Length: 158
Image (cartoon, rainbow, N blue to C red):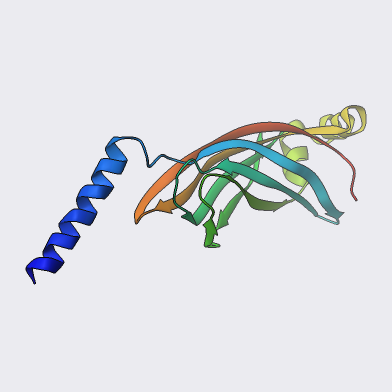
């Protein structure tokens, strides 16, 4: 019994040491990649991309959840709430696929019908902003990694 208690204390002491010496760090948000409109059908626009993060830790961690708010041309169009748990390799980059569907009426409603039409035909791009966080778990400790990124997306479908 004393041996098991000794091992538990040793493990906790090692984790505390690693945490204090910055051996365990919070993953960081790097950028959004591959942003594109993948579908424009009827009353739905589907926007997809990859959020790129860096895991600086010498151990792998686990993605627990994604909670992002998406804005297009400064209009809130939707949320990305995903709970796909996946393992993130130690010391490298990882990508979280994000996808949001929204009605183009949301954009037209904010700018008015004529303003929205003129904007869409003259600019041919959309400003897309993602804000929020992802939750990761490193050695049993959950951390929120903040996301705040704005990109310009061409209005065209594949």
